[in-house]
Amino acid sequence: MEWRQKHTLFGVVLYVGSTVFVIYMMSGQPESRIWNALFWITQLFVAVNSVAKSFLQESPYRFRYYFTIVRPATFLLAKMVYSVLLMFLMSLVSLGLFYLMLGWPLVQGGLFLVITLTGSLSLSAVFTFLSAIAARAQQNSALMAILGFPLVTPALMILSKLALSALEPVYMPGWWSLALVLVGLDVLVIVLGVILFPFLWQE
Image (cartoon, rainbow, N blue to C red; front, side):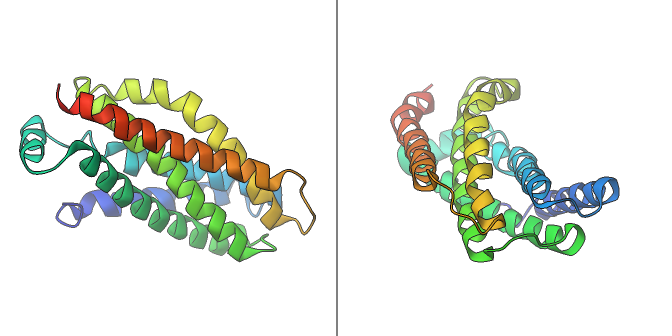
């Protein structure tokens, strides 16, 4: 469906490019901590513009069709897997554009890539679940914004702190504790989605 509606996918790529270009025009090549903060803020807006629409673009008739051919938990997990892959692809595009326009302050590029993948999982899981709730609540996208802020803010703060270890060659105490908290949040969101979505599905 995404490949059939190429304008949506390329629209997100254009949005990422425009955002990074505007940041470059406003700040040039910022120092490493500002670079890190700008990267994760960009990832948040990319998630809102791409992943968060995964359920909102489905019509009620298509939901009825899916209801007859697949289990609700399977459907939700499939959406999450696709959203993670899409978000990680957009994150790689963002990272490439940041490298070209805003410099490359990373000391450990491989570690930052792993953190970016984890961030893609976190943002995708949260926004896919919230998109499912909003879609079943008469397509109320405002509900997604209201519920998403308290869930996404802690994840972004943790990701930002974890990424600092890839920017600065110093030991950061408590790094693994933060990583475990983030993984726990991801698992909690996925489990809640699998448990609650069947009830939304039947409405």
